[in-house]
Length: 292
Image 1 (cartoon, rainbow, N blue to C red):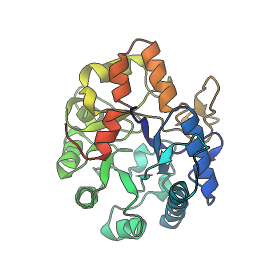
Image 2 (cartoon, rainbow, N blue to C red):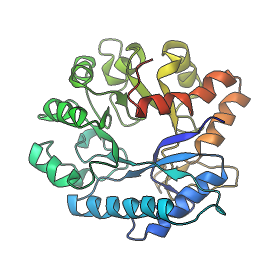
Image 3 (cartoon, helix red, strand yellow):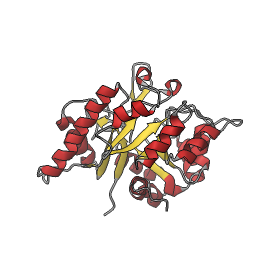
């Protein structure tokens, strides 16, 4: 049976990674697991380095509990690592993330952030156009961690430079990044046209228009599309999902598990085999650094 893998989830059902309680992270895993998700990578919000490290430590404890305790009676996604969404991001494309916490992508900041967690950090989202990012992308890649470009105002050329430095992915394409323009295709255009880089796609009804999804699947190499939830604690499982927004109507994050959003795409006419690869084989190969 193929594993269903979500590489980008902040939380769900009232819980998220901004916590000091490992049971909260296990609850996220339990809720995703109840929806048919086999493995998850809890995603850490940008904050001060101290707070991000505290959040990472809690996820690490949850991972250890999954390995040491008998949890056979629980329908629970396995926690397989951490995704750091920041803090080396572009404030002009912060989305709902706290731009005040974004910092310079220096080696010193990076070392302070990741030291002691190198074995469980799987993905780091970074904006390639910020001064110092290209050098840091190379270092991240050399460590065996995936550099994913996102929350970025990068031009096509700047995104391409990030790719050549070692970046292997683009975080939630079109969302919180420079859009496609006919005279400057930008990072979104690069993600669509480069057939080797992986792209995350939030496939709920709110983040991308159905025709934008159609454009992605008609343009992009199907082996490089990964459907993610980007779910947040306000996402309500077991109900007909509503968009999660703030009081101004701004999206806070995803509202569906990848099992739900994939079923939605299949129901509206997308090819089932293609969609299933986007939540099984593609993320697995991405995490294993496979290029086929």
